[in-house]
Amino acid sequence: MDFGLTDVLKGVKTFFVVPDVEVFPENHLKSFFMRGYETYFLKDDPEKDLEERIHALFSLFPEVILFVNIDHAVPGIDWPILIDELQTRYAERAMIGVFYRKRENPEETKQLERLYLYDIGIICGCVPIECQKAKNLFVLLNVLIANQANGQRKFIRASCDESCIMTLSFGGIPFSAVIRDISVNCFSCIFSENLLDIPLQTKCADIMLYLKGYVCKTDGIFALKRVVGQDTVYVVIFRNPEDQDGLPVNNLVQINSYIYQTLSGTIYNLLDQHT
Image (cartoon, rainbow, N blue to C red; front, side):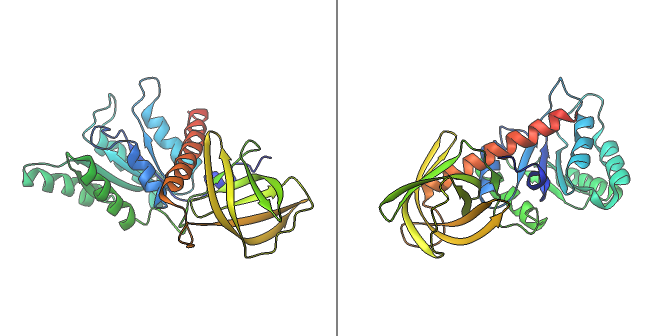
């Protein structure tokens, strides 16, 4: 079952360029994913041309936001010159910000802001990074919120392949289905049996999800049904033990990790193919 790359390319992609992982670990990206912000690292790989990879982002994705760590020196790159060139080349598509270790000297901070905000004219801000990881999680989340980095989307969705399945019991009969795509709010699926016709708004308990190493048991409500080609696709909204929309914390972390790993793997593979 191949759903193509159309959905992968959609939506705002935010890349943190050459981040300092000591104060900005990858786990922060998973936290942003959980809140609907699709974020990635663009690391300094000695075997890859970083400038070429930055240009590839604009060619691959219709909506890109870049935050550049200007404290990280890359041979052959002068950050003010490169950022100015990106702004000229990509015009209104150049959604760029910079981040850096917080300066002790206020005058140095003013000089950086004057250069990037006024002389070069970046629109996504100058972000001082703290020495504490926990503080940076909230600092950067607020920056994402301010720049509307989730676009129109509330939940990030990942496509699944035939290896991702769910099982449940309905009317005392066990059924299985292939999971088509999934978010932390819901999933869609196609049953391998054509006999199943679950009435909409039916709540099913003890749904088992098998997602490439992640195994989750959850409840869900069959909220929508639509025909796609020869298949009937059901959309199931997660329900937590309090009978509210959503997942319990342990399942939320698991499914969010699956979504992050699936999408980041696809995005990085695409980038490798184009550089």
